[in-house]
Amino acid sequence: MTGTAIKNWQSVQQEVLNRINSRVWKPGELIPNEAELASEFGCARATVNRALQNLADSGLLERRRKAGTRVATHPVRKATLDIPVIRNEITGKGYSYRYALIKSETIVPPSDMVARMRLKPNEKCLHIIGLHMAHGEPYVFENRWININVVPDVFGVDFSEQSPNEWLVENIPFTSGDIAFSALTAGTFEAGMLSCKLGEGLFVIDRSTWKHEGAITSVRLVFAPGYRIHTEI
Amino acid sequence: MTGTAIKNWQSVQQEVLNRINSRVWKPGELIPNEAELASEFGCARATVNRALQNLADSGLLERRRKAGTRVATHPVRKATLDIPVIRNEITGKGYSYRYALIKSETIVPPSDMVARMRLKPNEKCLHIIGLHMAHGEPYVFENRWININVVPDVFGVDFSEQSPNEWLVENIPFTSGDIAFSALTAGTFEAGMLSCKLGEGLFVIDRSTWKHEGAITSVRLVFAPGYRIHTEI
Image (cartoon, rainbow over all chains, first blue to last red; front, side, top):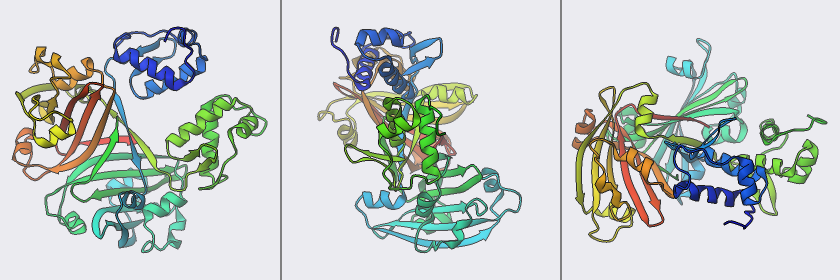
């Protein structure tokens, strides 16, 4: 390494990672500053910055302004998950895709949903239940509330043809959102929707998206038994 | 914006995001190249590159060498999850933490685990079952296999004092890993470990980590009913 100029941020990152993993730099220890590393590696300070920031984003370094950069003592590892459009997730696995609209109604949501979407009392939403099928079998159903004041265009859409999942992704950009993963026990409704046994453990994603004007939508996705999300860490 | 120099990659990213969200640049459309944007924004080309790469990493742009950068038609949103040490997750929520070793044995793992960890036939592993408690209640149990050929140091550790989750994070750096999220239906074993009802839906994390020499560990974490992982998108 010594004497060899490191050309890009990826190779700086690899070298820093090697030093962390081989304990040249130990957990909790302060590492040299950007200028020192840039000089050692023979590269621009911005290159070192990019590498260190990336490792900090992964939880392996802790950076504090003025206090410098330390090797994380308890690294909080990060996992990045892809959240694709459901049709693409299903066809990407090589299955045929079909969508069925189960229910569409304009009503006042239950109080937990009013709170989550920060709606006014008695404000109505479009409530849609739709089933996504893979190879003719239930794959996931969506139980969705759409804020008709923020997305008035929904009334021009035929949701028996196109799922709200797809229409919203393609037409209503969001500025922020949150997502939660959990499990539930299949009751009569879930078992009926997914053709599974009562009492099966099901994987659940709750997701809400926002734009400046307010909540766009909040959806619960309940997946058929056996569903897994997988990624690298 | 025009005439004002954009100083850092974050402000370039914000401006690009505004143009995507306001549909100045529409889904599927080619956007100006880095040199053009750098000239428009009055900043370095590397600054534009960093901003565009970050948006590509988030799935909002699609970048292809030579073909240029397009606004993603079907953005695959990414969610980043923190994977903390369990003790820190529990104390971070304000609960007291306690750990109990339930089982420790050195045996040949079942065949699915042999395959997942790419072990030789009849190669023994350290099998540990441990329970993590929050405020005296079961929070999650770990069902873990540790590769004793890759991590021979485990035999010096008293896992009734320290959980393998913590010991491994602090002592055995890994170079790669994978993680999966799913749900299972509580059987007699899970219900007994977590003091929950038979047939409850439980959230599950399966995780394996690797170093150059081979698999370090593979663990299944089964969480008590009601557990959620939450993040921003």
